[in-house]
Image (cartoon, rainbow, N blue to C red):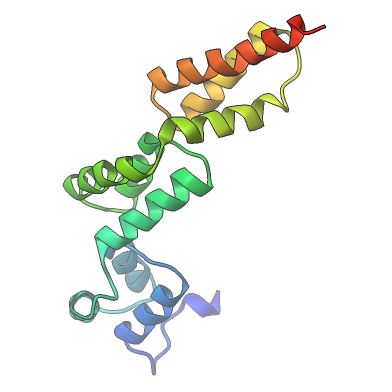
Length: 166
């Protein structure tokens, strides 16, 4: 892609601004992208420092946005969001802080319940197999086992209640 190559008239700072205009990025992720575009390490370091000084680059803000998006909108658990942030190069201590703060405003059980109901409506077959598929699906989404088991029991018991209705 010609788009990813370094434009000789564009500085690392300008390129970083363009990247950040699309969405927040973490420092490590942005450094990698600038490096892939052929900028020198020192120019990248100076640009990242300047972006942080201007509050355009902020790992905390990036982490908060990523958790909100990954957990609330895309229906994944905190474990999955943590893994995604680690892969993006965010510091483990910062991730723990942001996740603790987010835990107050994001109800992981409610999100798990929403995803379970959505998935259950698409499952066919005998109850035990549907239950097992639902367990695997929610665990794969990064929800804690304690929440997964509670939610699956609740969702599957709704089937039993519906079967008993005249």
